[in-house]
Amino acid sequence: MQIKKPILAIFTVLVALMCGTLVYQKKHEKLDISHVKNDILFIDEKILNSNNIFKQNEAILEQMISAEEQDLYYDAIKNAKFWKKGIFVKGKYSGKNLVLGQFKCESDYTMEKECNLYGRFAVDFDKNEWIFLKKYSDAFNIAQFLPFASEDAFYTINEFDIPEALNFYSDTHVLLQDRIFGTLNSQTFIESEKLEQTVDKFSSVFAHNSCVYGDMPDGTIARYSSVPKSYINVFNELMQSKKMSSQIYEELTILSKDQPKIQRKYGINFESCLSECLKAYFPDQEELTMLKVLGNIDGVQVYTLAGDLYKNSSETSLRSAVKSAHKEYLSIFKDQSGKTPLTLNEFVSQNRVFFIKMDPAYYILAYDSNFYPNKTCQ
Image (cartoon, rainbow, N blue to C red; front, side):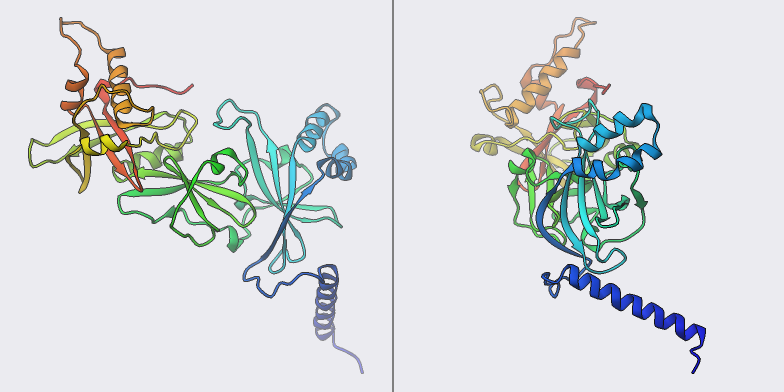
């Protein structure tokens, strides 16, 4: 009996799928995937030898790049770090390995001692096939580091689809900044405080000053910035512009029962030009009693500080914040008409500065833009 071609084609595909499944099961026969809900079975981290990866692709590199550029690519691969983090057990890349790569980059604009870029890959080691998962990696051109890797910018991996914002609080917005900020052994993450909140996709959530970090199942951490409600729009504009700045400004209206409304342009500071985390201050026990409600901005209470402002205190205290702002004001004060500069007490009592309470327990200093220098980032 002759088998018709369409039936033969279907039969061939089924046999190929069965063979592929048997090969996969043989290759990973010791793996228990019964508990895996999504695409990836995460495993204990395995360090890969970057020299071996280089040697395996040396011939390919020689064909792809000019002799003048070869040393640059060789150094890029040899200086990179690679970790096998898991195995794809379902979906498009079933049978391939999840690999995390860390690449050295050159930049003066980094808060870390080193500038690193992170990329996730689906890798078939037997076929030496590397696929750069662009959607779940830092934004960079993989061809500058691994020119032999192909690229997939669209494939969706449920485990890495993290929220754009964390809805922890009512008046403090927590916005995604870096899908891969670093790894669990980074100093920032080690110094962070674990939060009680839970978020799907994160094993746990941590905070360090005004930034929030979520640890991913592959050992990377995502970073979020906490932003006051009244500064959301200008903050997002800055982040979308990709420009660096140490401060942002917004026209604010402070309403109060005890005094006329205040309408001024107030600024708030980042930790530095290189950071997307806002400068945070933490009141000591005495300062908690000194905080007085100044009024509200769009229903959110803001505070002034009343009492002995001159007392020595830690660098992250509220008194240090107002004294530092007053010092900045004095640096730009010009006595052009015989006026004397405001004293520290006058500076505070005239509402040239105030505090915005952030969740869970710290404050952001806001300052009158006319009484504070505008600082640019080079």
